[in-house]
Image 1 (cartoon, rainbow, N blue to C red):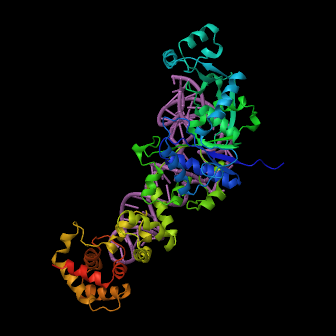
Image 2 (image 1 turned 90 degrees about the horizontal axis):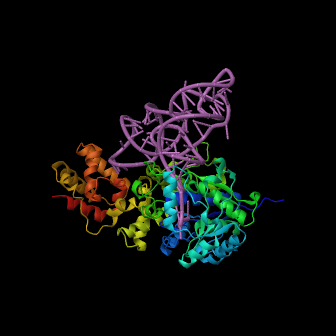
Length: 485
RNA sequence: GGCCCCGUCGUCUAGUGGCCUAGGACUCUGGCUUCUCAAGCCAGCUACGCGGGUUCGAAUCCCGUCGGGGCUACCA
């Protein structure tokens, strides 16, 4: 018999921008599906309508696309098990919750929020495991009549039978939960809307999900999901394989949040991080290919990824390492590719308007900045001098240019460059070395430093001679003159 | 509090009883190179949480302990 097709799903609840933790999960889900030749399902868990917005849903879709994590079933592409937005599957959940009640797996619970709160307080005071008492499991006709006359609307609560749940987590090994500590749980709110506890399990069964790779925060909800599977008539052997991924933590060892580092993928995109760099870095958080290999392509990730090599311990997110990998990826790009990726940033930062002519200039400048930027956004500051209309030296640098020695350098430079007919970086360098180093007897960093500031406006720039060649003779000369008092 | 998960350099990791006086990467420090900044090259710092076992031998197995984290919702 052929192996059953692997089907994994990424099922975020978009209550905000997707963050690095979500994406790490999505990446592993995707990589596992692709590695096994299975299907990658993208499902939106928007049952909490108080917190999920359309804006966040669309952002999540865009983010996955941008990262290249293409899905086989889900929003936009559809599929045989749709719809893939839980808010469009309400009738399905209703059908199952009704059935669970009819079959005795679940029951109506009329306890009010206040009563439940009081119960918890009492349990806490008595140092007992908190949880629903099961009071409404067998509700008396009198109580029922009273609740109804009071106008109380019931929730649907799942009955958690005595016993234990044991399963082999693909990452953590055998995990056991005693149902003593797993109280009856709510499936449907009093307003009739389904909860995650119901929807996630129903959909995983209906969508034939075979492997669930998700965050470890969901580990302790596994026995509840299993109970829903049973209520749906599934036997243990057909339950999906569970694999609980370790957390991605902030540098301060707290769960990643705005406070301890930027977490939204959109933030990294705006800053000029490459999707393949983000994926490569995130893949290294909780997983590694071994053999001291780190820099891998998406294809290699697919080829090498196995759940067996995923860790069970949490990882800290390190921006420095991400930057290093981003720089490595940038250096690997072709000039054309890097140009295409830089142009949008230059436009955004008003360095260029985007004309074909400007883009040609950018393309010719890309080789000299490729090894000195770690993010695409850094290109703006680096290339600004080539496009700026009203050139001015940085206020910080200006005073140094007025010193006598700098003035001598500028004058000499102007003198030897003006007659130059072959305006290329080799000629420029030869002439300047001869005039400033041999002629004026200056050290290179002193001499070229002044020219650099006068021509590019900053003491940090791409290589000087190449920069001047790119700038052109006319503008270079103008700027030198501008620097001379 | 209860239940559960986790514990190798500052960080990510390699490591599944001898190849480990613990390897790689990032960071940091120093040096080389150099027209600045980078990149590159070389060197250095720094780790098996602690305590018991098991074994000829433990980072690797067992127990305890300490520490960190998650869950404990009509959130997911």
